Length: 231
View 1: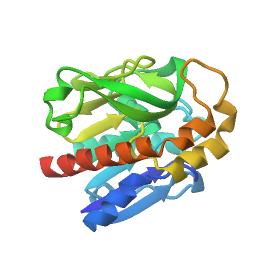
View 2 (view 1 turned 45 degrees about the vertical axis):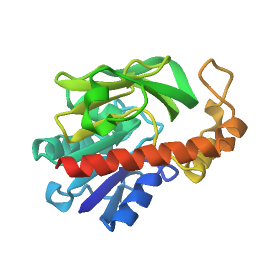
View 3 (view 1 turned 90 degrees about the vertical axis):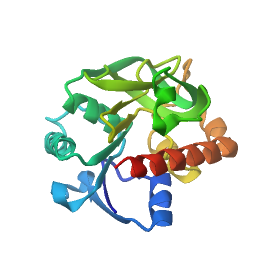
């Protein structure tokens, strides 16, 4: 299987997704949008993974590649590719599907639980998951639920923590792909966001939870295994 990912900044890569892909011996390629690399064609991949980043989906004037990226995501969905969006990636998918993306009431940074919806608990991707499980978060924007999408989870700070569109478009506002190393990069380059806040934890605590890093990695592998079998 061919997996292609879109990377918006040099310090936010797929981390645990790459570990899973290597274990499965899948082919992985990437486009570094921050280096203005060209977009792939839809025939160049089976899965498209859209990573996170500090920019907004509404900043196409500041980051011209955002507009081309949205067109690629739309073509991938139309061509029935598996599309996975994480954080900014989930917001881009929501935007492409016609939903509004905007500033959340609060920033959510650190380890907070997400709660599955009643319908998502019956979905194959999350079958057997607890009603509530820990996830890593780093976001200030949120999105409305696109028409025809299944809301997957919510948190105390964010109503729409993820959705599934059809069976092959997965948008996750939260981070299951993060490793200690990738979280450390976020902290290094985005430390200015670690201010006092109800849903903002400090760097030392974030990096100390090796148990949580192991848990999200295991959960991600389950979800990706199941998503692969759905095609």
